[in-house]
Length: 191
Image (cartoon, rainbow, N blue to C red; front, side, top):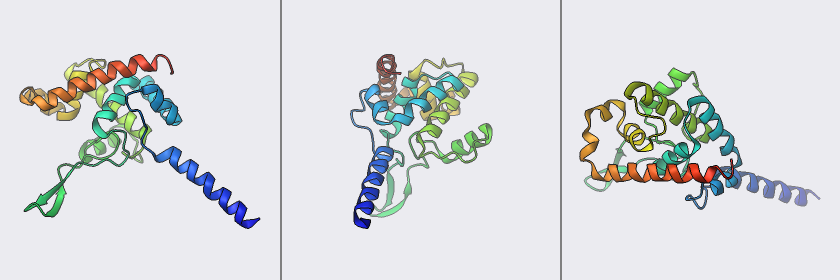
């Protein structure tokens, strides 16, 4: 009896862990994503209500930044091509928020226990950042292209206009904006 109970316990824990941790499959379909990750639906809605940022925008930023990986990090740097010497930046988690920006977010919102590896915390961060960009730079909360450029470059970096010569970044921003439109359209059917 003890072996059977232990087996059931292990099996149930495996299902719980796999349901909470895994990266969603079919990342091109927002409805599929939120059907695989049930708690994400409420996180997306809560951020939309609080910050006025569409669920499609939130998902498109996370897809671009981390491909829905909760512990995503930037690439390592190597000294002499062999010895690891840190990372390209401190970006981490679903939102790929930098250490300093995350600290500012926590201080500004009072969410001192928020973690970048938590989906709901990351969507709230994106909402906060888009709202701040709207207030500081006047970029519409619905303009995923310019909002993403400001998100990637930082608001001060965006003001310099240096992004205009970065063709790779402009292509990523265009793809992010396209994903936002697709995700928002898809989510109308399942949210």
